[in-house]
Amino acid sequence: MRIVSVQLGRRSYAIKIAAGLLTQLGGECTRLKLGARCAIITDTNVGKRFAKPAFESLVKAGFEPTLIVVPAGENSKSLKSVQTCYDQLAASRLERKSFIVALGGGVVGDLAGFVAATYLRGIPFVQVPTTLLAQVDSSVGGKTGVNLKAGKNLVGSFYQPKLVLCDLDTLKTLPEREFRSGLAEVIKYGIIYDTKLFAQLERDLSKVLRREPKSLAAVISRCCEIKAEVVGQDENENGLRAILNFGHTIGHAIENSSGYGKFLHGEAIAIGQVLAAELSRQISGLPARDADRIEALLVRAGLPVEIHLNAVRRKKLFAAMKLDKKASNGEVRFVLARRIGRAEFGRLIPQKVLEQCLDRRASSIFKL
Image (tube, rainbow, N blue to C red; front, side, top):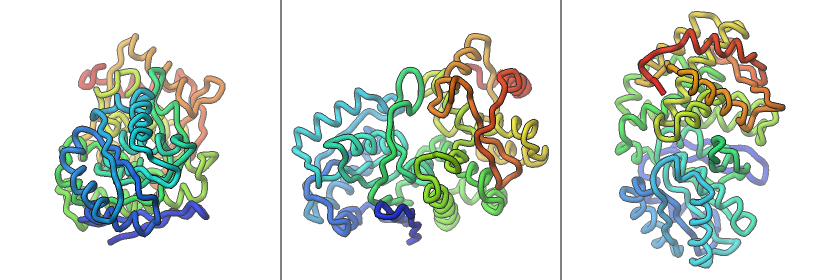
């Protein structure tokens, strides 16, 4: 088992990475000394595969779980789903010492984390991420939230889990498109923080795509280490943590303006990262060779790297970016890369420059 520690004083917690952890959920929760009543929040897809072993593990350890299932997909990251969860938690008489288990991908983790942060003004929760994207990114760091029609993650809170259990076995059944989507976040860590990780991905990507356990465990643990280091220094995103948003300002706007579900999160982020690399080449001095390496690795991972926007969709894209929660006074600031392994945050990009970048990257393949 690989263990990564997120150092946040009294709110520190462990990320445990290994195969077979789902059946150990009950024992891990016992060690955390949590209350007897609990709820598993999952979705219709994940619930079919993994709710039963999670539920049985909790029962075996003496807990009294209830199961809450939301529809699979980004549309469940909504205030309507939050209300549904609240009602079921109240019906099951969860108390302050009770806890929530977030069993699923990023949507479930963000939703369940927000519910935990706000129900009874905050009850403990445990992350059990079942997708690559969730294991390397969204389950770690305490960002929770839901979407509004106006934009992604506009309602939320910083609320840390008590534990993150990354069971590598859950990735075996992950659809290929979902797995490749998660690789966008994996590649991001190399771009913003770790030259060696990026080179490792260039070398071993075929092994990762085959989901070889050793390579997968090494990559996931390194990504978690990087996020833990960044979050440990800047929990509430007042500075350094912003580098984790490389490619996300454009990516989130693509998700929102195209209608949630057209692109998976990682697919939109991949396009955003290529555009951010192009902006970095023009503005922050990213060598052209590095920009080419970024695009080439994303292509090898089977991710989209281009998008075509007609006038109407382009207008929607820019409107969505200006509503991004990181915008200030209507100005959109970007994370840019100076070189692979080093990023800077807070760069203001004139709209004209961004439009020129979109023009250069235009393609008819991914028409919105």
